[in-house]
Length: 77
Ligand SMILES: [Zn+2]
Ligand SMILES: [Zn+2]
Image 1 (cartoon, rainbow, N blue to C red):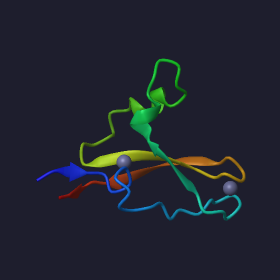
Image 2 (image 1 turned 120 degrees about the vertical axis):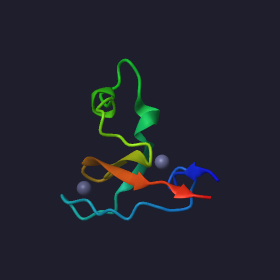
Image 3 (image 1 turned 45 degrees about the vertical axis):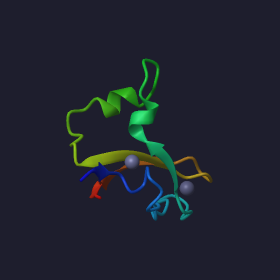
């Protein structure tokens, strides 16, 4: 048994709509991928709220550049 993120593994896609302009938002990948000493997201990702059972993804709107984070529940395979 293994816990995987359905988004990271291409089993599921984001269906979020941009609250600003109504465009379908794009999955920018797991927030963990953005971690780095100079990353603007390092501060957010270091918050202790991130549970093991979830994968935090950055999603963004290609039209107006709005971005947000979503918690994706891991699935068991
Ligand atoms: Zn993921
Ligand atoms: Zn937008």
